[in-house]
Amino acid sequence: IQKELGQDGDDAADDLSQKIEKAGMPEDVKERALSELKRLEYQGPQSAEASVIRTYLEWLIELPWDKETEDNLDVNHVREVLDEDHYGLDDVKDRIVEYVAVRKLAGNKMRGAIINLNGPPGVGKTSIATSVARAIGREMVRLSLGGVRDEAEIRGHRRTYIGAIPGRIIRALRDAKTRNPVIVLDEIDKVGTDWRGDPSSALLEVLDPEQNHSFTDHYLEVPFDLSQVIFITTSNQLSTIPMPLLDRMESIQMLGYIEDEKVAIANKYLLRKQLEAHGIEEIEINFESEALSKLIRGYTREAGVRQLERNIGKIVRKLAVKIAGGEIGPFVVNESDIEEIMGPEKFTFGVAEDNDEVGVVTGLAVNAFGGDILPIEVSLSEGSGKITLTGSLGDVMRESAQAGLTYARANARLLDLEPGIFDKINVHIHVPDGATPKDGPSAGIGMAAAVISALTRRPVRKEVAMTGEITLRGKVLPIGGLKSKVIAAHRAGVSTVLIPKDNAKEIPELPERVREDLTLVPVSHLDEVLASALLEPAGQPIKLAEDGENRQDVIIPPVSIDGTNGIIHVSGD
Ligand code: ADP
Image (tube, protein in one colour):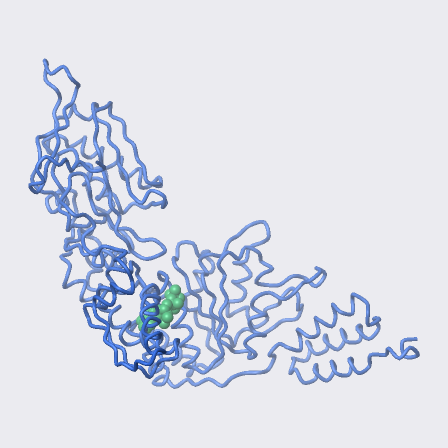
């Protein structure tokens, strides 16, 4: 009947069948495609089913079943490209060169771990992955897994769903147009799990070299070979990556840059990149070194260089206006230009605190954005032995605070404190900024030192930062993330960092400049912390009121510091 009506649609069917022949599908996939084509021919062209089948066939045809780019596995060339695009990062580059070498020798037999680049934002994770693709000569596709909660995002919806399409992996391959691209899976630490299924189990199948040669998307229903794909994943933290995934990865840490490295990156890479982005690469622009320092210290606070890159972009745009107006340079950017273009400084560089204060300690923390300083404040008031902890502290941090206070109580006499005072004062411990949730044991010695400083009226040296877990007996236990923390301390301009003795073995791994600039003091007991960090008392000791002083039970005398005559530096005031 269709023929009679002149609706035979043979042309379209012929067209599809030719495309199927040319798509280079494996035999079983081709059979499947041809049988779908047959089904299509039986449908009326207007039927809903026909359009579903046609879309399905188009997906099959578009996939790069046999299209490949040829790899350039010359290790020297790879190293050159990596060096050309990125400053430093030797560990990462070495590892990538090794990977390429093995690939060259083992060919398709290679069953390597997936490389995961872990570190705070802006340290170059994505951009080094892009360089890998460029170095080997492969296509690259990036997909962000942040917030993916549905297994179907990875593996597709079954065709019975209206509007079903393949999952992201198959879509990425279609975009790459080759079956051996580099696929960068960003933010693998932010994959969630809920009632819609577990995307991490689908990812496991994608990443596992034992299984991924026959990855089956729910929509396609036929296997696609992913074994030729190079997967590189990136993450901000390892702790939230599902264990089975983490197990298949080899994580390379990229912890962030110190100021010298940022200067070099800005001069050699970021400036050039921004000039290109603004179409003025032939113009010569130089930053005076003080100007660049100012730009880094006064306008960025980050482990990576993303904000710095944006700031340089802003300056380049100002110069672009001049160039468009006819000036040809060369331009030299000095400190006052920075101030003029960027406005008042956003961050004050230097130690966290302006004065040696009683009850204020600079702790160190790591979060998904790298290391940072963590001020801890303690304030005492006349009361009844209550403890208040604020600043969105987690359980572990609360317990550290309790442990610090118990230590002070137990060792009151050694610390020259009247034991009776503990029941008469209220202790308030606060960790700004209050809206950010914080947790972890490594603030232990900081909390204890802040409490003891407040109780003994001994100010804390402002140039000292500290990190370490504490036990009830005052022993200092090792912590994680030393490198990030020490880099943050260096960035904040402190001069001395107290670290647990058991972490001292990591000191040789720290950047040389950091080791030169900072005095790193390994400590094994709180006594050593107090000896290094606290100064002589800046006021009278806290004492119980004597009979006749009928005001209150305890007297907390004010402290004055550094000749600030009469200004009371009790923290929090
Ligand atoms: P991430 O993926 O780690 O968040 P990006 O890869 O997006 O960070 O990097 C941010 C920017 O900083 C990019 O423009 C990148 O080229 C640049 N960058 C980071 N590290 C370096 C480096 N070592 N050398 C040169 N450029 C760098």
